[in-house]
Image (cartoon, rainbow, N blue to C red; front, side, top):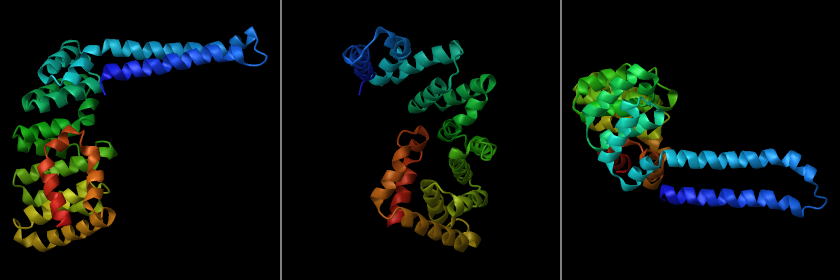
Length: 270
């Protein structure tokens, strides 16, 4: 739904409720003007909510217009003005600008944004670690990606820690550091509660690392097939996997590994 239509719909809803709130008391038995002494703060709160909503929309209307039109170059210029030129390094705008850079395949711009963000708000780098790290992979800076993810795999918030560790292993694999990648994927295949992370780890162990490291082949394949059974027990059918992976569809970092996710799915259910 377009942002403008959504705001109009919310406004109509708020106005209807406001009219009901103002008129209904007059039809209540025993209504007294003294009732407003208790009732007016609720009406004021409703009006304040109405004002904040519309003020926020009109302040950001150009941003929403560019998003609706999917005009990514123009959106980048707009965001660069707000974030870099005006110094508004808000979490929402920094993340949106980084995503736009990736959509335009401009990895260098993502890393430049990361450097500027690290100076002003270093915590935002960790909050967007998957975006900034993937920019290195897409920009072919594999050793840089391995270092970037490696230094943050224990310090990031728990909700994305397994993904950071997985990308660390993926970068190590791309850099041909097979044993180190195998250690990371083995741990994730054994203990990760994120089923997509566990499945991807077991897939790479079985299909990429086991053929490359003869001395580890048996260990990797045993770990991989044990993990595959664990994942399939929780997600017995492909539709279950698709539902589990659906929450990643809006994550720009997942687009970089979409092919591997499809390969892992075929390996799981073959």
